[in-house]
Image (tube, rainbow, N blue to C red; front, top):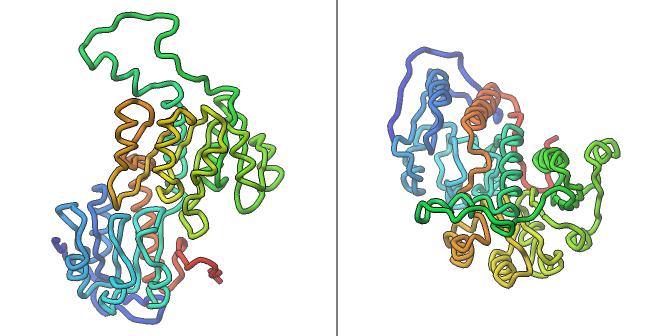
Length: 355
């Protein structure tokens, strides 16, 4: 870790818990490398310590870097559990997550310790929806399999009427689990490809939203999965959504259906998914997220080598534009907090109102 100190004085800052920052600049620690424009802006505003190696820091190294800091700019690769929060220096009052997801942070423990947590929603919507649509296209049309044909030995036997036959997207039924910002953006794109839209979520959307998407609402996920050809997951990871696509639910999918998950790995029973693809009940799957604790499931890797599933390394929001906008959102959250106000993207424990 390397600290970059900047000497231009700024007005005294007050955190939203009333604590005053007495140094010239608030000290922040950034756990991973960010795009150059974001780092430059942070360096102009704060006394900032960057992780020059860009390798994930273990808890000991990160806690050491936080000495004297007020803000931690974290990422999904940082494990910020209750033990970590209990050991954080008392001066750290804000964890500004660089990302939409915050599964790596114990929000309840942070709240109990008086530490504010923020994230970067909204800015990832369009890029993530683009990626979901790309996965939805690649698997039925066998795009990655076809792209590798010429790489095997540099030859191609030529076109034939029955060669590399995939499945048409238009006219199929898409089931979206979670019609939030990203789910809605996916639905808009899918409509342009001729898919009919079905969705299931905690609440039904307003009639004007359903009409604009020509979307059909299902109160029961068990019932919806029986009527769709592709199911795409766009719901957060909570206690209620773990294995929301369970073995039993996937067995209820139409024979030949496809599964797309660009949201959270905990939403899908990976072993059951692999078994159902291997058995032929499901035609394939496209996954951008995996159970990192165990590494990528060996069954999924084997199926990917056989071109039965498509695996991408968490690329859903991986555009330069998205990363810069995420950094700008982090900066807004930090400055708002240090100015004594509630950050616009504060994360609260489940069931708590922001008021």
